[in-house]
Image 1 (spheres, rainbow, N blue to C red):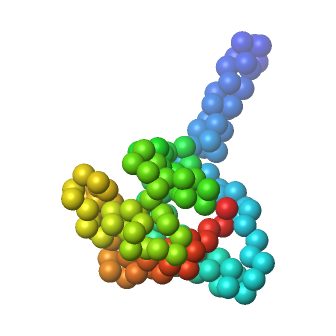
Image 2 (cartoon, helix red, strand yellow; image 1 turned 180 degrees about the horizontal axis):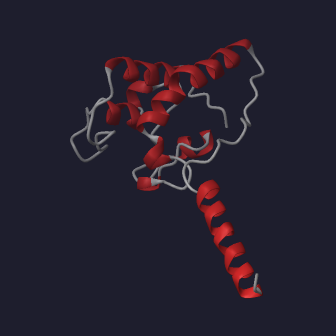
Length: 142
């Protein structure tokens, strides 16, 4: 096979592999939080089994990984607690004053905070999961 054909074949193979393995959601990094008390362990388990599926299904598309709409990231606890363009969104231990809860309940004035997710309201059970998580300290895996 001529050298130019080999180079094109290698380039095509590399491009295909990049498309196959470089697109789509990547694997989540391992947890960086390690519970040190039974209460933290219970909150950590609750986050992974109840909260994370709600966030993954409704929030991560816009507020995780490289996506930070409104400059708000849910990728780490530090980023979550920092908030976004409009200020702090989660106050650990205080779901009633956390903007995230006002947004997911669609209880704001329509602009501050905006209803989240914007098209569909979460179910009451999902809202309760997030409320309990914040009330218990908003423990996350990283």
